[in-house]
Length: 132
Image 1 (tube, rainbow, N blue to C red):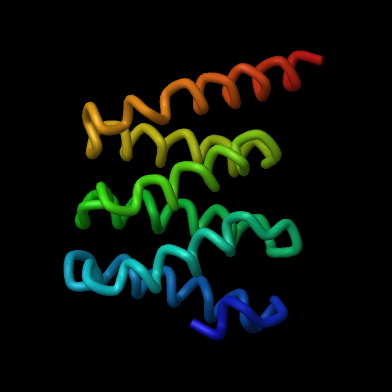
Image 2 (cartoon, rainbow, N blue to C red):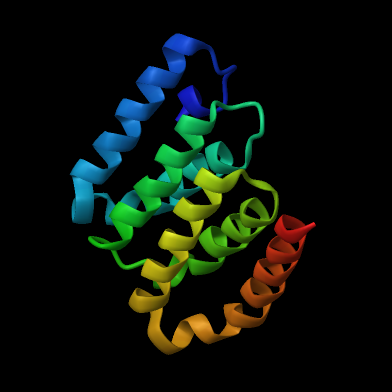
């Protein structure tokens, strides 16, 4: 996990991308370690000094893991940072975030309802900023 807290050089980005692939490969076996994995992924998503491809890979890792692991207990730790990134990211990152939010919506069902007003607000602000 220290790998995600260090400076992001070109070589480390490749290693981090492979670690994201490993998290996905672990699938349901990673469920008991989500309290360690999720913060590392989310920090990568939110860091603006990280390559965009690595940030997108981190979002897609959350997306992929959500198809294998139950994120009900970790929803707030994931959705709030994704909403912040949605408001500031580029088009590719925003598309990946929206896909991931949709997957989380399906997984969480009615428990997602508490996040809807926040996501609507951020989505509206993002839409308006794209128009102007």
